[in-house]
Image (tube, rainbow, N blue to C red; front, side, top):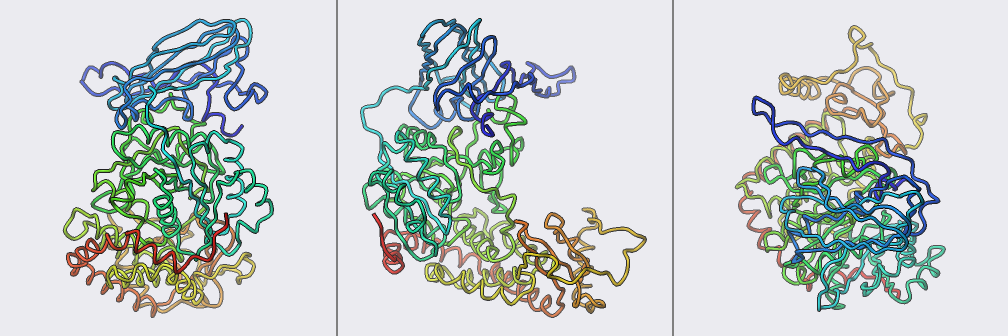
Length: 637
């Protein structure tokens, strides 16, 4: 019931209504949403996965994320010019077809009165959808209930058969998630019709094949499941294995999926159907919804800002974390504009093996930036990426994670620079080097010394050149974890009572708490803060007991810079660590960071040439084959 708003809306067919002209001064009028009161859906009305009942006198709209047809994407990227909507109903009522334009304006297309058992067929053109827009339909019941027996969006038949898919999941100790998704697929055999094999690359210490319930799931998949147990080579090593095996077994596509997800099985069919009809080989990805807040979508599409080399939203109207419970498809104008992307996250992403054969496999980056780099590389070779609405998974939310601190900071810092060296259109990488140094300073004044040690290691490894990337795959994470065990800011304890009670030697001045500096005063304030932390000795008893307890949401650099000692909780809420100011560490790491970034800037051109020359070998089938031969433990069929 938590996901009902993604499938159907109860109530009138209202949405974003746009005025046809601006005001008298010629200014653009503002789009407004008109929402009729939404009625509660009744679980007993859901007759099957494809059938539902509409109660007498009521209205149901399928203008929803999973059931509306994203017409503009099909018009732009495929050879399909016309589609057909076929709705089979039983009972009296009406079937009403709507469309929208790129601005989100709702337009009625056609209406059919129905009674008894009826097939309503609508022939629909994709011509009007150059910049955006969807098709959908509503059902209105008459004096008696109206049952939708089934409905389909249909495209012209094609002579060639559907492509074959290797469906691949990379996992690290997520046995329950893996078994659940495998079970979902087994329960929806139509989703697996064109799946050549389901490949599970298990890189964990707790093996899926040894988990309770595995044998039952394996048997339900009727011989399609294969497990490869290999060393932990990170997400890039796991997904590269999926790409490699798909090429080796002759599949037309590999569908990469994360382990901590819940899949909507219909999405597998939609990705394949779309990819088969694309004009050129195209990477087709699904969207990500929040596993613990099912109607919240992470993002509708992503690009890479070429100057800052950071993920960015393609449109200023878009927001992160859109909740379809609060604003449905018909009421949200920016959801109707087609979004063209640079890449799609590998939580669910279909890659043609024709693309892999031409541009290679993933870079050996362990984790972070591997999916975005692959999308940028494909784009350079003329292969687009499409994030296809109506195809999605539910994924563990990033709200409860902070991967910019701790062991993952090394991979964030290193891989961002590596990808910029490969793909930045700016001579010295735009703002990448400057921002990387800024991040170090912020972490240091926040007393996050383990994080900065890892980030400095990252810059050192970047400066060594591309030759060592592959050798670091299995070894770098253990090194980072060993290093971080020596820093109190990265050693977590589950109970805050494990730390001494906080105490300030001096009360805050005039009772005021810590406030964020304004934009005008930020730079001089930051400079003064760094100087203070460098020169001033650690105050009073702050090494024996923390000055404060800081919740994760308050862990901001400008706040932490005011303490000499604090206990800070982690993003997951499972523990806390003790941050302690250390002027000696600050001086050493600040100088090292400044030196490394100055060398990076000086050597940017040479390093960029080295990395670009090495991509072919780093991502080749033969290079990865050697890695897999070295790190494969066994296979289970």
